[in-house]
Amino acid sequence: MSYLQALVYRRSGIVLEDGKDYLVDSRLSPIARDEGVSSVDELVGKLRRGPGPELAQRVVEAMTTNETLFFRDAHPFEALKSHFVPEIMKARAAERSLRIWSAAASTGQEPYSIAITLLEAFPELSSWNVRILGTDLNEAVLERARLGRYRELEVNRGLPAQYLGKYFTRRSGDWELASSVRDMVTFRQLNLVEPWSELAACDIVFMRNVLIYFDSETKCTILRRLRSVLRPDGFLVLGGAETTTNLDDAYGSVRFGAGVYYRLKPPPADSTRGVTVPRVA
Ligand SMILES: C[S@@+](CC[C@H](N)C(=O)[O-])C[C@H]1O[C@@H](n2cnc3c(N)ncnc32)[C@H](O)[C@@H]1O
View 1 (cartoon, rainbow, N blue to C red):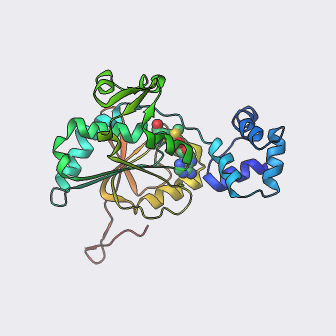
View 2 (cartoon, rainbow, N blue to C red):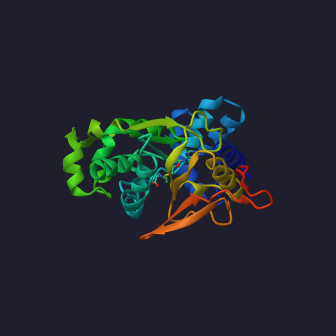
View 3 (cartoon, helix red, strand yellow):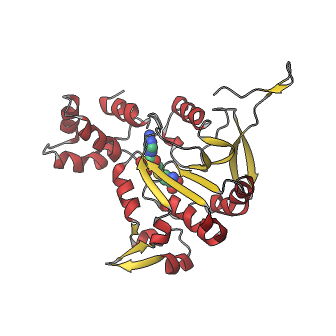
């Protein structure tokens, strides 16, 4: 394994496959230029000499793929509206609190699509304590997410036209998201392969299109850790190419419409003593 592959794996869990030289070159050349070196090889040489964690972080961030869009795949947002939120609202009627985590939020389209879905379908949540948390490893994409400003091309991908008129304002050629939506989402940096500090229990977790970059061992570690963050009756939404199957059998799957979603299985009953014992994560 090359030095760069090892660095990216150690700091992000991302597996950089062999033969991706073109990708490495295109992503790292701008950093090489900024650092005043003439090639990506020289940049790697600089990293090897230990120039500090900032450059290493920049390099790792550059190797993340941040592709996202509003209402990506559509069906998770349908399921949010027709199943997840109604069920959680029933279960939390006394505490009136709803927590949703978008665990690889990129530039914010996913958590903002969640916020718009809640505003559109559940006006009664205005008297609830609703918290949507968007996290990502990459601080640069989070900065863009916090700004809530999107280019024409970005709002033309996935966002229904009526929401553009209702929740966005034209500003210097871009589209700015209304504060009523922005204020529902908090963004912070969180690396899924490092300890998840100060993370409250969540009712619904969107962890989409990020496990695909990891090897099985890392996926297992993350899913295991998620067990103690996802509330026992909560819902987990993965990307279309991701699953818990053969990785963590604490989760079972449920199908709503076109999508498959995941929930924690109930803890096994202790048949010898007739009491229910909590599962050890
Ligand atoms: C392809 S985007 C997915 C965005 C969104 N969830 C979606 O499905 O449209 C993957 C995101 O995962 C983030 N990511 C990669 N490795 C990560 C890690 N170890 N911890 C947290 N986020 C990570 C990347 O920075 C990137 O923004």
